[in-house]
Length: 212
Image (tube, rainbow, N blue to C red; front, side):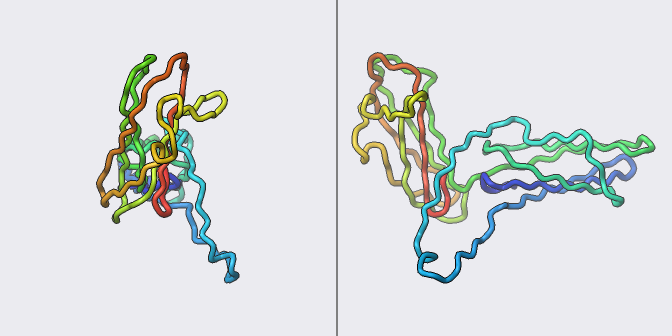
């Protein structure tokens, strides 16, 4: 299981024995503990910036010519896309004497904290809608944090919340508490203004060291 959007390593052991291929999947996180020294500044809490997920490639890795070691094993390392989903891992191997084998296994990419907005395909002028945002907690403990909801002009990045009848920080920022392995829903009512064109919905959430 690939846990967290920053997990970026996958190890495959590909021994070809009698035409059979075996694969071992292993996830390795790039996150490392940092030593900031013992001065007073190290005691200050720094809130990390929330990185928006944007890499949704359907093919995470492709290598058509991977050479194995003498024991028939090979190691690959790559960045897992931002999609939280299941991945089919296909491995095919051929020896010099034309023996071949293949195997298929499955891996999962998971984020401890994930937000999923449910949006209509389109909105017409004057439409009233309730935008539902689901907050998922895939960690082993309860998470409490805040979620920020925004509607922006893609060209200028200007917030259009007031145009949609969402005014004030209380209406756009909600607190949440999610039990381990569970989910909760937040609803944002809005009304589509006249003369509106294409818009983008931006949803960010943070809870402790997790964000999405």
